[in-house]
Every structure is written in structure tokens, then in C-alpha cells.
Image (tube, rainbow, N blue to C red; front, top):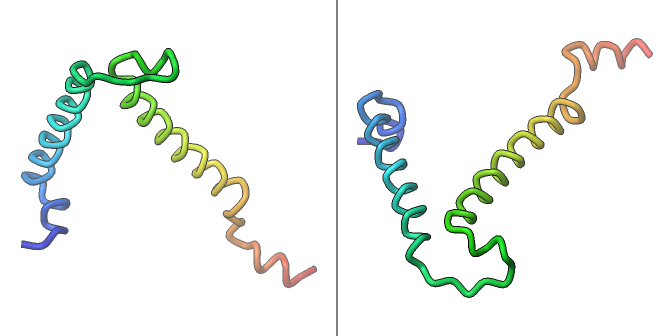
Length: 85
């Protein structure tokens, strides 16, 4: 069995999503029982690190796509226009 089979087959996709969600829930629940030595007030909130990580990841993806569309991507006929100048 190849790794691509695990990602592409529908029955494995469901199993992987369930495993992922269970691991995510265990991680957030475990955060309630861990003793923390905090430096900032918001670090005392249980689940803050998971929430902060998720929001940061979404921000990075959205910002990267925006930069890609506004700065990196060119029109389809970009090189044809350049030749006529």
C-alpha cells in the first residue's frame, strides 16, 4: 500500500479525518490538565494555543494567496504584450 492510497481512497479519507479530529480533541482537552507557567494573561486560557495556531495558519494561507494573486501572477497574455512594446 502506498501513501497516496491513504489520501485518495474515500474509505481511508474518512478514517484519517476521524483520527485527525480525535487527536485534535485530545490535544485541546489535555490543555485543561497541563500546568502552565505563563508570562502573559491570555496564555492562561485553556485552548488558546490551539486557537491561536489555527488563526495564524488561516491568516498565512489567506495572505499568501492574496500576495500570489496581486503580485506574483501575471495576465495570460503578459509576455505577448511585452513583445509589442
